[in-house]
Amino acid sequence: METQEKIVNRYVEKPVKTKNGFAMLALILLLFFGSIAAMVCGPVFLSATNVGAAVAIAIAGALVLIFDLFLMPGLKILNPNEALVLTLFGKYHGTLKKDGYFWVNPFCEGINPGAQGSSMTTNLNGSTTVSLGGNKKISLKTMTLNNEKQTVNDERGNPIIIGTIVIWRIVDTTKAVFNVQNYRTFLSTQCDSATRNIARMYPYDLLEEDSSNEKTLRGSSQEIADMMKQDLQERVAMAGLEILEVRITHLSYAPEIAAAMLQRQQAEAIVAARKKIVEGAVGMVEMALDRLNENKVV
Image (cartoon, rainbow, N blue to C red; front, side, top):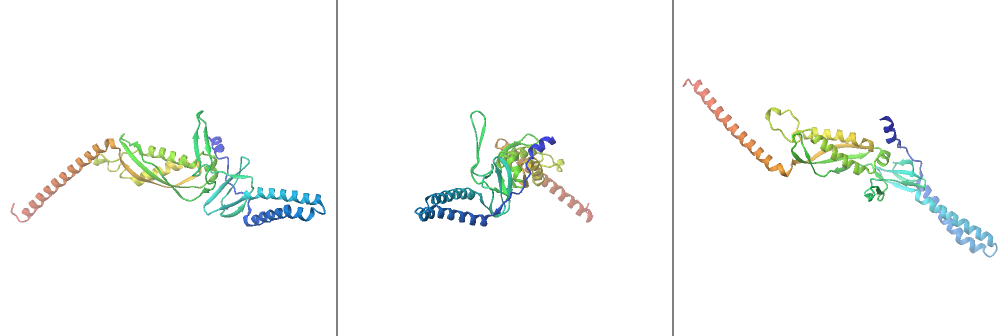
């Protein structure tokens, strides 16, 4: 178990070495205009006196221009609460979390499998292909997952429809990028599993009055949501995600039993109303007897 944990968490988040972006931009512009000037002015002024020197200066200017073009992709801009996980030739290089304008190794590549533009397709032979499009930056802001309504069975086997909303954020970018294929899809799947796991442990509502201390999905929604949060946090910890809050947004019986349960609730309401009427009538008779006794009529 410990060996498997080390394999899953073999990448530890570390800061990447950067340089000031504005200073590097000035250097890139200086090299760019200097190379253009060498390529243009060298042959013009030296072609008549020294052809070899003119050719050498033009070639040097071209080489500097090519080198300058290689430096330009290293410029990165990060906004607050954003991170950029960088890989260098297939190996983890570091994570950039500071907001500002920076320059990093131009051969580094940003990776974000959970970007909005990413897609996952399954081929005919069963293999999965991931297209890492979209934004390479990873958002560290608090995000919301509005999980779709799903039909589950409660403790008594009654089909119910339940919908949840999850407030979450990324706390470890290396786990989110390297431990799972797509952390957004992983979170949604684990949310479905946690909802089913907790919902089947409790009944939708109470059937008997003597079991008023029993927890139910409808009557103990806050306690059930806290259990869902704890269960979901344990499931997504390997992906570097933190679950801040889980809320139940929709809870109802499935259509196939909704009518029957409505009739049961109506019957319970009628019985409760009649019970109140009987209790009121008995109370009025007791009051009348007490009054007659006080006046010594009886």
